[in-house]
Image: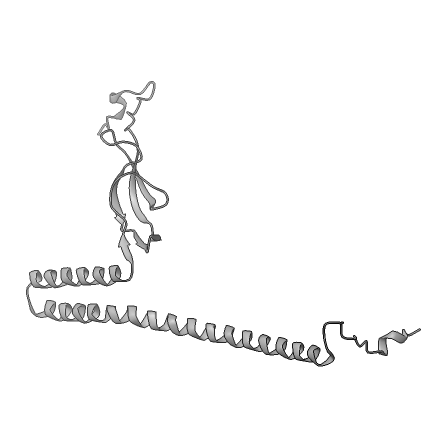
Length: 180
């Protein structure tokens, strides 16, 4: 059997403090606020995308002079001495570092003790003259962007003192002689 109440539209009577016309006005206000909120979200998304494009363009504009100078250095390298080329490439490296610094990139300091937040162990070495956990060589430079690790430094770390090899029982030097 079908329920008779499904075909009926339930109309609420306005409460004692709401007039009949005010209820429609509240619904209209709600719909307008909902549309305004939707437009606001869309505008925020557009502004964010535009801001990202502008910042990206600004950063890339900073690299263009570096590329120009690198091209000049390569052209000069074809027609001049290696010392001039080396000097030009050094200047380009400095200029490149300056552009990165202007965008909040800084190099992680070299040496010191191993810190897993800043360093990645690429190799280990046993040494007596340096304390265990010390970094003895930086194999790949690490960088930070506004205080956060962009790329960890690849380092060689001391694992401890060199252990002397113990002679194998029953082995003597005469057994290693090769007879011709």
